[in-house]
Amino acid sequence: MKHFAAALLSAAMLLTLAACGGDPDTAQESIQAIAMDTVMVFTAYGQHSTAAAYAAEKLAYETEALLSRTDPESDVSRLNSAPADTPVELDGRTAAALEAALAWSERTDGAFDCTLAQVSSAWGFTEDTFCVPGQEELAGLLEHTGFDQITLNGTAASHAPEAAVDLGGIAKGWLSDEILKIFQKNQVPRGRIELGGNICVIGDRPDGSPWRIGIQDPADPLSADAFVGILHLTDAYTVTSGGYQRYFEEDGKTYHHIIDPATGYPAENGLVSVTVEADAVEGAGAMCDALSTALFVMGEEQALEYWRSSGYEFELVLVTEDGRVLVTEGLADRFTAGEDTGYRYVTVS
Ligand code: AMP
Ligand code: MG
Image (cartoon, rainbow, N blue to C red; front, side, top):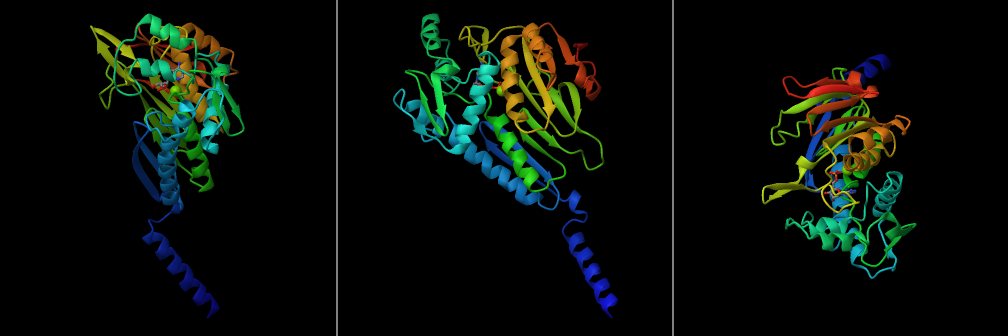
């Protein structure tokens, strides 16, 4: 009798599982959100997929509210509008993102510079009021940039006179790190965290093959299927930065949103896009995001030098102005070149 009851119970459990979508590892939730000027998609598998995806969405909106430069109530706006040298108490998450930004500013010798807020505003990139600023104006603004203009003590931050913070170059990478933690807490065995050009893949696809991530062809930025190549990845982050992602035209010239901190002008160092890939370990999302911006500023030679001196904790795909696609050695067997793209593909060691 006992056996019969147990058999009935397990049959009932199987039926319940089937009603919920069968094998818990293939139960899937996918949520789309529009935050931080980006279309975000959170896809989680597993028994807790729904909780994980909704928690990710909630954190995305909260992070936008904390780090936005256009919302006057955000932590970043409160810090920037506070009087100079006056500590402002920040949410722990803002402080953590700022700490990562300051660390990467230092590690890239200021090529990643989280204090270009006033310069970006002068170009109108923050407020969508595009214009070309004068050289003198830019020179004046650059006197108040650099990570040493910001002081962070625990969760209290202050800025030097006329200095201001912009976390736009790292915010999504930092957020993807936090969402990965949410997915891990919810035991998500496989999934994708897509924040525009910032992507984190967890595990492999349900059929056991790696996730496929297309690298946008910078020459055809609006096409949904124009790729310079495809990355085949498991448990990895990949972030792409490129001038084609945000720009305006004036008098026949194009000006994009990634600023060279040395000049105050859009970086023009021979690259049209930079993709940084790394294993999905703690902090790698922020690293890939900061580096995609910084290496774009550095240009081909300096970027490859930086990669070689990094101990290969990340890999690169660089697209150059003269039509080459450079793929670093450690990524070459996980990269498939696009067909008939017109690019020349080179593996770099
Ligand atoms: P990303 O798309 O990650 O390359 O970041 C570009 C955004 O970062 C811009 O829209 C600005 O908000 C900010 N930014 C621009 N130039 C830099 C720079 N050199 N270092 C850090 N952030 C920057
Ligand atoms: Mg970035």
